[in-house]
Image (cartoon, rainbow, N blue to C red):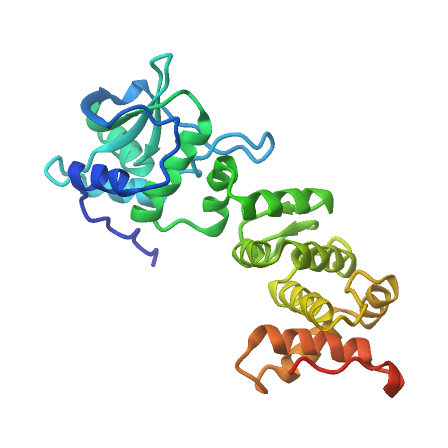
Length: 296
């Protein structure tokens, strides 16, 4: 039996405007206060993200949600769309894509819109999309990433930069991920925001160890934590060391995962057990004076 798409509670125009008005980090590209107007849906454009060009900010539409809106559509429960108006007069959707497409399928030709005038900068539209969808729609980390990259969030910019440097691409989570993809976007952004230096080192080491395979978040997290430990203790070590990477590659991912899992129940600090598991693999077959002590 197919799962029904989640029903969305109606949102009033005033509530959306209140959300926008309450944000203290509004970009300069927003010109004046939003206004309301009924618009033809055929005039509203959608800037969907294109992974090949890196342009756009809207996610791909979800047929299940569109069908649910089509089947249950009511003008009494309909909420307004949110759009951005560029200087050339063109209108671009910033919130309500599924709702609009469901309405079009139903034969609706016009809807009330909350219109934000902008200076034409697509990053401003992406900012609106991020803020409105953060409040209203539960997007996946992959869907959230691209508009926030367009806005210029520092952690998203770093993740995108390092991923491309290493020859990888970001992707949605999948049971069978493609080669040279990485799907743990939420964890990557957390690590990049926490410490850009250790994130770069951890990603570099992970890419070498995986040799084109989809990078797993537990190993990436452990490598970043281990790099931070090396720096904090002044051990003169780094996870980017060729002999370190060579040994981990030789031992293989199964051995690394087992070493991590063996320590999983020893502490409630996940990153510590992941780092110590990797350290155990590195320390194996080394003499005592060369062994690096565990992260306490």
